[in-house]
Image 1 (cartoon, rainbow, N blue to C red):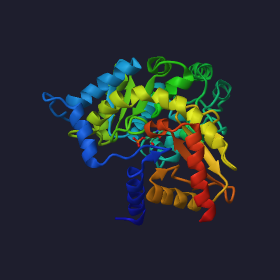
Image 2 (cartoon, protein in one colour; image 1 turned 135 degrees about the vertical axis):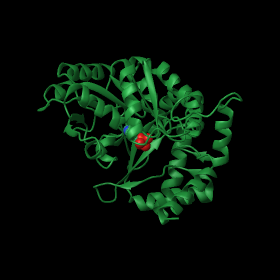
Image 3 (cartoon, rainbow, N blue to C red; image 1 turned 60 degrees about the vertical axis):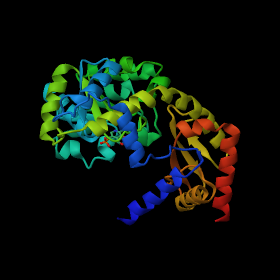
Image 4 (cartoon, rainbow, N blue to C red; image 1 turned 90 degrees about the vertical axis):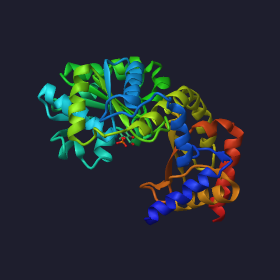
Length: 369
Ligand SMILES: Cc1ncc(COP(=O)(O)O)c(C=O)c1O
């Protein structure tokens, strides 16, 4: 076991033992996850076979219905699904360039797979910490085959455009002959800020990728949704990338459970995130962004080193069974750290006063450390 994994296990065990959790959710054990997928299965359900049938097909149908697309293909990861979507865009337009935000997942977290494996080239859409505007896309120096929009843009603070801005940027991409792909890893909770249904949002784009293990709490896995011809292509390339796995029913059942259980709750989390963010913004030296949050996730800054904040959070969890916020990272400003806050089920049990009280207890530990 690496030191990093041992530390992670310590944090997860502490979080599981907490009576109060502000950010995130208590991680289920493997046995609890088995119970969840058992409950999502029926006695007649047979295992899928290399991507066909069973729970995998059920998730594909469910997502295609929710997004209003002709078809959908299950993938082991979003990293793989999006490479296929970008490759498709390049093949049908004859343009190997992809419009990507410098903070987008393919550019920050995928070891340049789109370029190294896909032979594609990035054209940066904007330097601003948000998805590009219609004007920025209209003014791109080079034509792109696909414009990828990440909804919400996680590494900029889970920020979304407004609906009108989204419609406009999609129009600008089309005017330039580009296809539009949505990185919808967190599209589920984006409906609230955009004020539109999943199907209305998906209808703007040519292809949409969704994830099951972020807001929905599944095991892993993704779906790439769009027209039937794209999905046939996606199945062929999924095979080449090694993603047509013999059986994927555990991940598919967990995805179905997440769609049943968490999807209907997300709008409530988004509403409560506004209450939590406002309460946190009142802590000494705190900043939150965006204010109010666009989804149930946002960024929080506190004027302390990340190490001190992580230590205080772990001590609070282990000694008082209360979890404030974990995952602090130092910023460019010495002594100022940032963390992502996720308002999920456990945080809905806390009102603004309780958030402030918990924050006060947390900060006292930081100061006395
Ligand atoms: C915005 C976004 N896109 C894509 C991915 C890739 O998903 P996966 O981990 O399934 O490859 C992630 C994962 O964190 C993500 O946050």
